[in-house]
Length: 533
Image 1 (cartoon, one colour):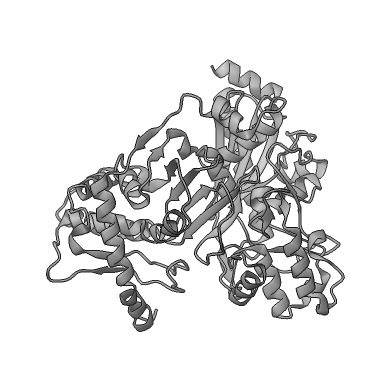
Image 2: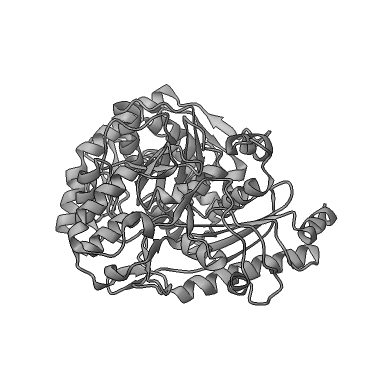
């Protein structure tokens, strides 16, 4: 096996995916069978500067080089060879945000990440103009807010892009973006797989009196779909990626994609009526639509798959942070008695205990809001646990209420899709830390969405593997082979995962909990207004 992998590395029958997450940059090299053969990562953190959440350009490049270097070292240690060539490379990153450049290629203002909530006026006005929900984190909201703020840099803009679009541009010279990420910059037409021309025209008319020398379409990156060729690694690009000079130029790159798109790929959720839920520090769920939604919803974002199909997304800021805090309290309790605590066993024990609880959590109520939640209308959050004297307060119900709460905001968003819009879903794939304890988070998500939920072992490979798969697809696809076929036949063939059907009693219990949850939102509002941080 190792000799075959060694030969693949030497001959370049590999693909490399690098994804920039919020706290980690990860590089994954895959072999001819599309399975990971080497990996490396680099930790990094955003910083708050002058009220803006950002990463510096130096952070970006040192992080990229370190993650790549660590992956190359891993390959060297395992197989005894240096990486001189790669079959194809792909880059991914956190979606959205704002990076404007002038004609000289200089960044005009520090990178504004998706995390910034400074574009409310722009978001509201553009949503009304387009009759299409424009979230605050989208690139067009950042651009229009800069215009509304009369920021002097706007007149000098020659190009705007997102993080992975910037990296791809610097390494190849190509100003392009994958359609999934494009759809998080500006609304995309599912028929053309390009920016919505009517909305582009509406925007240009909206700002016509400002007298800018540019129009919107010309400063956006070109939208490409999965499988398109997106340029090659240049001599300049090699020096930025691998300063040792070991890697050679000329390697083809696939379109850079956002983390939503890579999440769809690594869970095989790009076909109509499929979806996925990513549950970790934050939680978001996506469903690939059969047709456009009937109207715009402030709670629901609409993006696309890497192939350009429309996707409805419910994005929630909070998921496991409050759960983890409570588990740490139990750890501290146990340690006070001199017990040595295995955290995996503690999580497993407490999560499994929740299965013994009442289906509606015995009247208990929890809000896991470490930060605000736009779906339920909160700009800030206060974690809360609430009960009445009549509630059945025991450990099983306590844990069940906190686990239900982790899915609470997602449930509110998905109820709009499944109940109001009548969106049909055949399969939801769950991935992330909340599903690590077998059968617990999975069964509760199935109850929340009243849908079968599948958990696959490969989902844990993450978005870096997902973008590596997109690079492999561009390189290895056969004539007429769709991304759906490539994933089903060459990536996930035989990988059925474990599927749990929703239990009718659990569904009824979760619905009862969520009614209590929605009725109790004024309690959370009072906490935000009264408990100032």
